[in-house]
Amino acid sequence: MAEEPKKEESIVQKENSVKIFLIVGLVLTLVAAISGWFLGAWVSREMVPISNSSKEPPVVKTPEYLVAADSHVVILPPILTNIAMPENAWIRMEVSLIIKPNENIEATLTADISNDFLTFLRQVTIDQVKGPSGLMNLRADLLDRARIRSGNKVSNILISSLVVEQ
Image 1 (cartoon, one colour):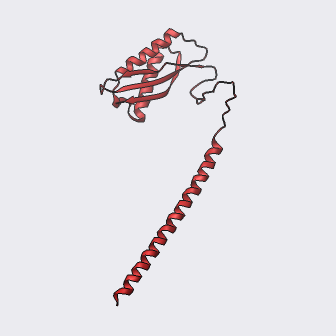
Image 2 (cartoon, helix red, strand yellow):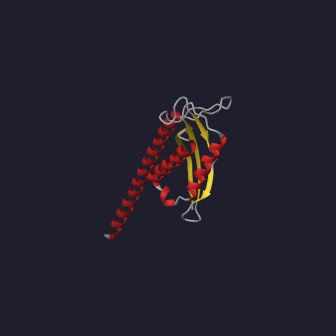
Image 3 (spheres, rainbow, N blue to C red):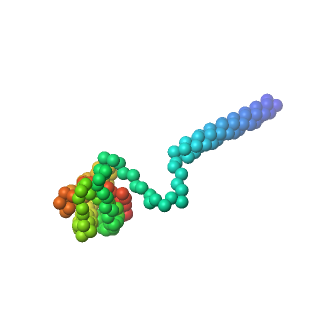
């Protein structure tokens, strides 16, 4: 007979632990829901509404320290090529040239710069473009090539996208 009360106590303890577990789960769910609501309200406040009735083309904002007020941007066509190592890897890059103020650049010179970038990217290995330092070195090398090819008419380059596929 002494065993029967112990069984009842264990059943009561299991029911209490289940109730506590459900209450804790409910409280955590409510906290997550309220946090999500506040995050959604904060994000929607930061978003700028876009109207489809606008006739103006979208304006690409670039940091002021990269582009002077009287300089202009030349967008090169995307460059897609294989790289040196590994042999089955491909790289796709979109680059824009920022031309110095009061300088003009011909279409043939733009094509030569793009071809120079293509030639350089064919010699690159995947380890050379890995990580932030690799991206900075790639950007510096491409800027040097653009400045040499253009006769120092290019003030900066912007890498808008860089994709490496293995």
